[in-house]
Each structure stands twice: as C-alpha cells, then as structure tokens.
Image (cartoon, rainbow, N blue to C red; front, side, top):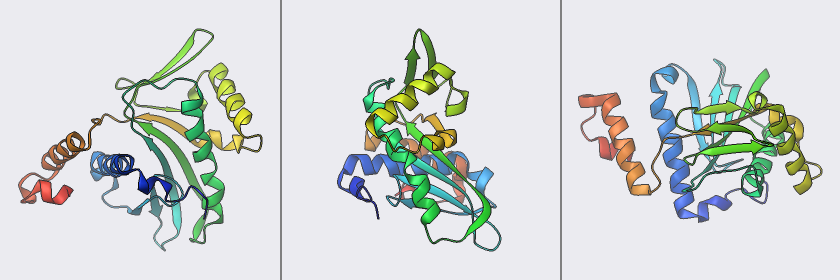
Length: 205
C-alpha cells in the first residue's frame, strides 16, 4: 500500500468533492452504464476509480481519477504537475493488484477538476473548460506534451512517462461548495428518476 493511500480521507472538503464528482459522473452516464457490471472505489489507488467487469468478474476496463477542486484556473506549472505525477504511479499499482484481469484490460487516467485548465507554451494554448470538457494527453499540441513530460521528470526522474498516453484532462461542471454540489446532484437525480424515487435528497445522501 502506497504512502499516499487514504491520505485524502483526512482532508474533509476534498473527500466530499471526490464523492460528489463520482456521483456526478455516475448520474451523468447512468443510461450508458445501466447494463454494465462495475464498482466505484474511493481512496484506494487514487481519489476514486470506476472498475468495469466482464461476464466472469474479471477486470475489463478501469478509469482512475485524480479529482481536484479549484476556484482558480489551472496552468502549466507545479500545481498541476504534482497531481499528474501521482496519478501516473497508479497504473503500475493496479497492474500488481490481485484482482483478476482480462488479458487485454485497459486503464485510463483522468485529472478532473471544476476549474478551467489553460495550458500555454510559446503562445500555443489548449483550453479545457465548459466548452471543451475532455482532452486526451495525446491530442494536446506536441510542444505542450513535451513541456509536461519535462516538468514531470524534473520532479521525479523515474516517473512513468509512458503512462501519459492514458491520461485525460477533464472539466466537470460542478459547484465549489459541498452544499451547492449536493443541491446540484439532487437536481440531477430528480431529472433522471422523477417520481420513480420518492425522496431524491435521501437517495443522494
């Protein structure tokens, strides 16, 4: 078990944000996932993960999320690079996990935040925001890809740079305070299930 495992549990507001992000994703693609076998896990290898299983219970796909709340914009700096470095290490940890896996199972990594991301290098800019919700690392301009690699290696020479091919930057349109996030999730739940569920607030809780 890595030193960072479960460390986030002690940061109450951060953990609330993780839970609310996971529920937001679950509700947002409820009908897409309704017939799939999967589980959601918190604070095991990273903030949370979605693990999808095949018909015999083997791991088929895994989505690993590093979720960060922010009231300011993210840029191409150490504040962003440090959580990216952390998430790269999780791929090897999942590989060593004893859970049974398909031979060709896939892992995807997500840096997800409710703050806009603006990556700029030599006047070339990539925005991840409400108008551009998700950008895979491999679709970033090459000059920005190289800068991210260099910054990661400057912090950790043995970093798993090859795992960047699995990385996605994602904006989540969720409020900043825990109370507002809950209100938003209750609204999503109500739109999704309507009168099929008597108490939407209780269901979210």
